[in-house]
Length: 456
Image 1 (cartoon, one colour):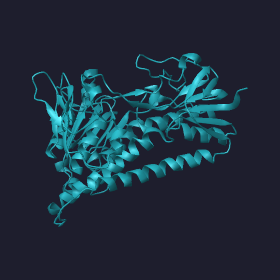
Image 2 (spheres, helix red, strand yellow; image 1 turned 135 degrees about the vertical axis):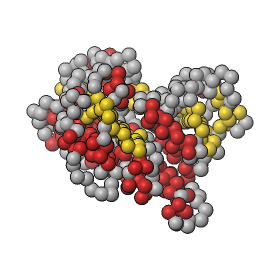
Image 3 (cartoon, one colour; image 1 turned 180 degrees about the vertical axis):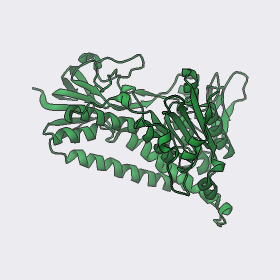
Image 4 (cartoon, one colour; image 1 turned 90 degrees about the horizontal axis):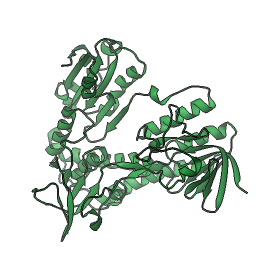
């Protein structure tokens, strides 16, 4: 006989546990199934461990710059084993916190194992068969390892394996020029490794405007990172000290000791037995959902990275909020109501909201653009952090802010001043004359909005 629950949640990432909390508070019985690590990508192999490492890398970088601030520091060394231990403790504390919460949650049963659908309402976990009126999928995603010539013959790491390093590589080669790739590239350069980034496209961070991509590349190259773009035929071969990678036909091979492959991710939907429940996926394996995150099967929802509607911790948690609001609060929230926003955590960081200027230009609408270099931001000058710029694009007719990029010190925080106005659907004039605190980076947002020119 199957074990009966009111709800089954598959996956204990960023959306699953809080939804279990809301459902059990409402008096429902919930089974949470997790095949690997409670907390999902963010806690175990994503935001928390990587941003902990970024903080250690920043400390090393700032220490080396001590003399610029009149501070004598002596020789700077990085003990990678201690850096890793700090990261592990913060990550494990977070994971155990979520585990304790679930295990102590009245009405919740945490089950370890791999879930597979046996029917629309039935899931098998090893020897147990579970049944529920409602099923919520929060199964996440994983790194893609592309089929590149010679890659299978050599050792390589993804974003998961590189977190286990307790020594600094002699030469880290990073395949990929997007967010995960660049965060690890800068981090390990600051830890003392030689670093080469290889990107098959014509520029780094291809989804950003070209001026953002160019400045990101300048920031990385200024720290001694080698950047290779237009790597049209990447291939690998074994070598005495590790491996050699040839980026393109006719290019000189690059010899490295450690290889990170960070070229994209795919959803963990391939071994769930979704066909047994009749749940539809798209060509890339993402579960198809509507504006309230319901699949094509009425009683099954999909939240987080597996639904293709965002691949961030904040989109996953927002998915939970949307599902809970609709189910439990009679509050008709929708995915389409949220403004796209994210950050790239190189140092200085990039905070992004809404459309790029390039996307606005292609849309053909009349727009205004404002831009200000960080060299003209007093707070950045005082801190000795003047790399980057801030940029905003506004609809010339409605005066609504369409998008913004803040690449510079505090950019990941400053972007929220703009994001909040966008979400409130207020015109840019709502903050153009706001008095902000001096000295901050945020105070230049109104100034920038007062100095806009037509988009050409």
